[in-house]
Image 1: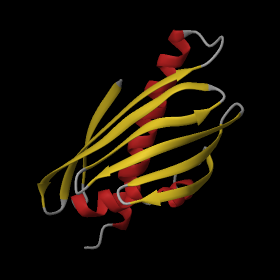
Image 2: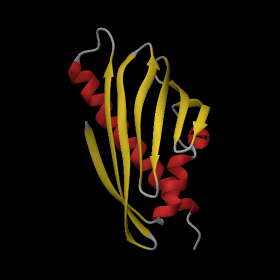
Image 3: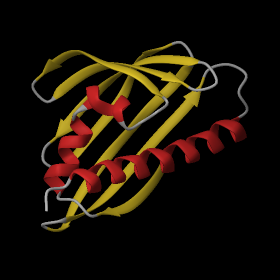
Length: 142
C-alpha cells in the first residue's frame, strides 16, 4: 500500500463529509466519469465507479465508514483490477485543520508491468489527495 499524509485547512468534520459524499466525486475528480451508490446499510456502502483514463475502467467497491475519522474500502468487482483497497484516516490538529492520510493498494490484471502500475499508483494517490484538499479548503465555512 502506498500512503501519503497532508495537512488540510478544513475541519475534520468537513473533510469527512467530502470523503463520504461518493456521488459528488466527479465534480472535482476529472478522470471520474460517474459514481453510483448501489446500496447502503448502516456504515457500509457499495458503489460503482467509472474512470476514464487511457480507457474506461469500471469497478465496484465496498466502503466501510468508521465515524468520525475514516473510511476503508475493498474491491468487490472489476475486470481490469485485481486489487483496489485503501483507506482515509483523519486526525484533527485543531478545529480548522486536519491531518489527512490517504492510502491505496492497486494491482491491475494482465500484462501491465509492476513498475508502470507502481508509478501510476503514486501519481493517482498524490493527485487525488490534492484534489480532495482543494475541495475541502474551498468549501470550508469561514
